[in-house]
Structure formats: C-alpha cells, structure tokens
Length: 312
Image (cartoon, rainbow, N blue to C red; front, side, top):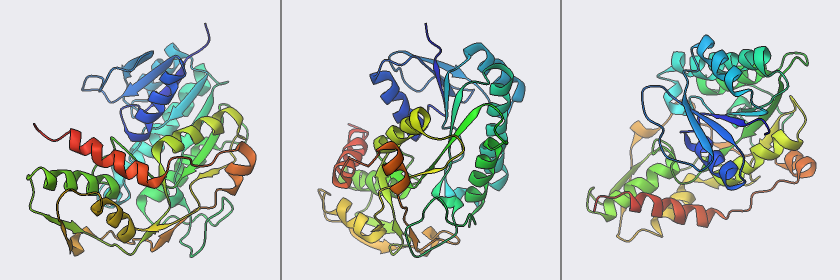
C-alpha cells in the first residue's frame, strides 16, 4: 500500500473541505484534530488522531507513525481581527506549530511534500492586484505570523519540500461566523427563524475583497502540492474584488424577510485595508487553476447551510 496523506487542522474550515475532496478521490488520509474532544465527523477512508501541535515530541511521534507522502498543514489561527487580541497564541500556533511539523518530517519522513497555506495578508497594502513579487509588509499580527510560517518552510533546499499557497479570502459552508460572509448568513438565518430582531449590525462595508469558494481553494492546494515548485509562492484568488456592501446585498436579496442594516463602529477592525485583491496569473499559467464555483452559488449554499442548523 502507498503512504497516506496527512491533513492537520482537518476539523477546521479549509482542512475539512480538503478532507472531503481527498475522500471523494479514495485517498487514504490521516486527519489531525485538537486533543480534548472527539473527531468532529466521520469521513470515509479517514483516520482521525488527536495531536497537540505545540507539543514537539507528540508531533514527532505522530508523524513518524504515519510516515506520510504528503502533508497539508491546514492547522492554524486564521482570524485577522482576533490576532490583535491574541498575538501570542496566533504566533504559537502558526509559527511554532509549523516548525514542529517540519522538524517531525525531517526526522521521519523527509521526502514528504508539505503544503504551507500562508495568506494574502503577508503583502503590503496596495491599490492594485497583488502579484507574488509584491513587497511583503504584513499589517497585522496574523499577517506577520503567516510570513514567519512561510520562512519556517524555506531552509535552503533542506527537506521536506515545502510548497507555499497564498490564499486570499475564501468562504463556504462550515466557516466560523466570526468571518464576515458566514456571519452574514448565520444572522440572516437567525432573523428568518425569529431568533433575532430584523436588524443586521455591520462594520466597514466599503472594504473590497477578493473572494473564492473554499472548494476551489482546496483544489488549488492539491495542484500546488502535486505540480508546483517548492518554495515558490502561488496566489490563490479570483483576480476580482467585491465591496462588502455589494456582498451583503447578495445575501439580503436572498433573505426571506425584510432586514434593516445598522452600522456598528465596534465591528471595525484595526488597520482594515480598503482593498485586497490578487493576481492569479502564476497559478493559472503554471498549474492551470482557475476558480469555477460562482459566487452566487456559494452565497446560496452558505445561507442554506445556516438555515439547516436552525432548531426545529
């Protein structure tokens, strides 16, 4: 039998969708989740393990027992806004956790192919689409932690081979409602069910973001690992930006009741960038990737996801 694939952070948003994609293709997969709880759901062909990324010895033992052929390191602190209040935890999980995975692979599976999902937040702010050669000047603790995570995987050609994805904003079912799209959908579903007043409090609606369906993003991750160049970053983005105001209108146009919108200054983030949009030329020309799921479909499915979770 071949060696399995390892997905860290498999109980999370992108990791969970990646797990689904690997299972559909019949790929033997080991999925890591945080200790202290049961595996979140059953997925055919997937073996769950509880591993603490901050425990170097536990990570090393777990990697050695798996001897994976490929590792998708999706575990991490993923929220920009939360990173301002929890910088220590953000750096611990994103940087030290990545270092432990890399060291575990060097000791027991040095020929594995490792994906490091970084972030568009590593780039300096700009008023144009960002290429992979744009200046790297993070504007948040989260962005700085992701740049440090990339650097942990760049070690002058030493094993394991590290592949770097720089995803821009992505959304879809099972995303934490702390994120704007899932937050809109959850609160609209609550209002429709009569569990909230018909008022949606929002923050900055003028920011523009490059949004991609999470299923397109994990498809890109697999292409990068299978056909990309180690240590060469690849933007994962649509190349188009949408204003949060227009995104909200998409959600509200699908609401089943009339909803009022109220601006809440407390929802504004520190150093919120007015525009974040990427240039997907590299991943398109080198790997043949392009997003295929329409934004309207993702919005519809995200709303239905939260509606299904409403109490009977």
